View (tube, rainbow, N blue to C red):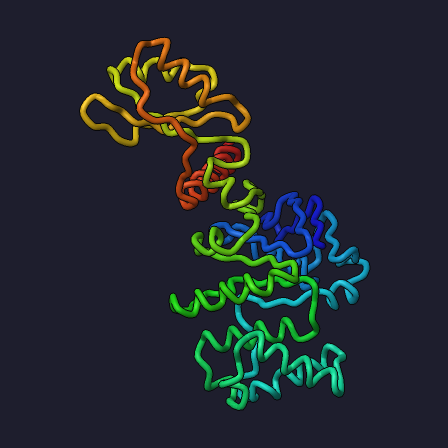
Length: 320
């Protein structure tokens, strides 16, 4: 439904989006996360035809956003970070206005307004002016305008920014419900939302995609890694010295200990027979194995590790 290939966008000497490629399938909810200034909003503005790119291609439902912009826009519902609302208009009048802009008229227009009011739970607010609404309900009105023409693709830039925890849960549940029928890309700084809402996560740092995986895959160590938790009864200094010399071990850290039992998180390549080799490793050294299983790590830790390493790499290149 969305295909981005080698997308690059510059602002003068600054590369905001650097050779980015990814795709999103029909009915897929994709979370777009990254630090401030990472390039999320710029990429979304290019996809939604608000900005031209310097290099690369973007298609939406098969239409090139540069060569067939009008057709692409017809298939996109866009909610920018700063919701574009006329606060002196009533909710229904505003939605009528947006429907007219979208070329929806007559009976169809009235039916679509009823549908989006129902979808976004705006029944109690439909006779109020937008300026009277809370931040949460204004976001709902913004979402309703993005849905008014029933597009197959939704692009939502920070849809829960500034909302209280209850409103965040409501909007998140609404996104999940809509995502059953549409392709959704939404950006957020709240990593728990990604784990609870998204089928797939894109992490962007310094204009580059540094991860493209499901939240579950990221929690298991990332695209190409796995993390095993192992408990060993034995001399910890000898255990750790020998772990350092195992070829398949990319990293390890002690996470707990009690009496003579020491627990470690051992990182290895995703497809390696790590569990089997760790069990053999313990047996060969005549230690006692108390536990061995694949574990998860906090999504926030993955995010910080990936974005920090990309920032460090960029800093080293700039210093050179």
